[in-house]
Amino acid sequence: MAKVTPWEVEGNIDYGKLIEEFGTKKIDASLHHKIAEIAGEEHVMLRRDFFYSHRDLGLVLKDYEAGKGFFLYTGRGPSGDMHLGHLIPLIFTKWLQEKFKVNLYISLSDDEKFLHKRNLSWDDVDKYSARNALDIAAVGFDPERTFIFRNSEYAKNAYPLLMQVAKKITFSTAKAVFGFTNETNVGMMNYPSYQIVPSFFEKKRCLIPCAIDQDPYWRIQRDIAGPLGFEKAAAVHSKFFPPLQGIEGKMSASNTESAIWLDDSEKVVRKKIMKYAFSGGRETVEEHREKGGDVSVDVSFQWLKMLFEQDDKHLKDIESEYSSGRMLSGELKQLLVDKVNAFLEGHRARRDKINIDEFMYSGKLSKKMWETTHKA
Ligand code: TYM
Image (cartoon, rainbow, N blue to C red):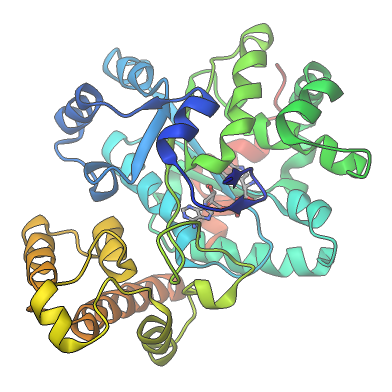
């Protein structure tokens, strides 16, 4: 049995079933069409169904077209350095901000990670918050329209609104939605209020790009938004970027060898992909040439498809070369190694130039946020 919660993802995930279980909707052809019409194109992760599920995305587009607008909110729990999987929602969020020119709030949930991870000290989350903030900003957001904040630091401004949210969530709801038990610390029990509160930073509809594991929060948000005088949040959910070892499950920080970290050197990237990336190739070269490789289980191909080969024609060529046996596993892996290394090089070069102040304190939106105290 697969398990998907905000803190744990295990087993073979049936993404179609998750839609039913969580009560979300598949991004259908008409939504694809509408987005392409407004944005002029579809991001590769939408086009290839990696972002596949949503709540009220249609209403977001309606609000946009009616001139009401909307805003974006996403986040990251700074429990360590970041890997490629953590960048997925951020890359897509950047595209949305660019196309729709909207405000974006990014939470660093230092509180959540400190409370949840037994062995993480406050000094650790402090250090990772600072490092993660740079990696987040390096994705390329508009500093004038982006506010990156640490929950612990911004809490004083959000406190009145936070209390309004906390007052609306009963222990029984939090227990039912998140599986809290008698052993859960009381800090963690109120964490859902902190994750929900930024969805109320503006009196417009909030659109939240994230992987599907974060959806339980939005279910509660949607129950309490109306009574508090706000719009129900909309969300757009991705699947999980798979671990190197196989397309099931998620790239996870708790398994170093399953992930590529943003600071992995060229050599390490090459070694990890060559050694661990699960291959859809055959046992021997002869058998491979004869029967061809299976792209549906091949992690290198799937990573190319999800993000790293954005040219549809190139991807098709790779698929036909590999499936026919003309391309070998080592050659396919080499294509991925080159793409990942080029991507990481670009990321780190952008990161070197970031002035984080602009995103957290001195940009137009950041400044405004520090001057505002939120009340419902
Ligand atoms: P965290 O730090 O676990 O993950 C950050 C974001 O990355 C997504 N994610 C992945 N996406 C694709 N493939 C993967 N392998 C993968 N692993 C993680 C997560 O869904 C998340 O969107 N509680 C949150 C932090 C948070 C937040 C938010 C996230 C605070 N407010 C609002 C989304 C929206 C957390 O610990 O995320």
